[in-house]
Image (cartoon, rainbow, N blue to C red):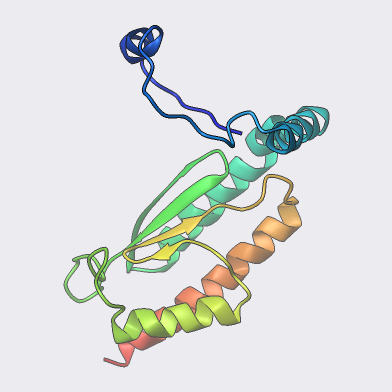
Length: 162
């Protein structure tokens, strides 16, 4: 199953100009059946409404709580079921590290605590991404944020131990 989002001029350009290659997986019956079943499920269960009514408000509340609680969480943002925290060094006010750098000792400690809490996510310091499944319940989402809070508490202790 393949999808692209492009601006109208780009779409118009390729309308009558073949690119010269294709994909044997494009429109494959198994991928199409999976995509169709997923779309039907999303519509039947009103997942978009669930994201708007339950997930996003809880995520905004919980992310804001973490920003208020920890001085090394500079800011947070959330759109739908995707959120992110920006981590800074509490001594310098700078990012805890640059993207692509090896993990600092403090971030290694945080990563271990993050994993020990059973969290699976995009941990790419200086950002911590939050992207729960669209079918998550409010209770499960709040539990996940409590786990993240405990992992961030470990990071706070690592910063204080320096």
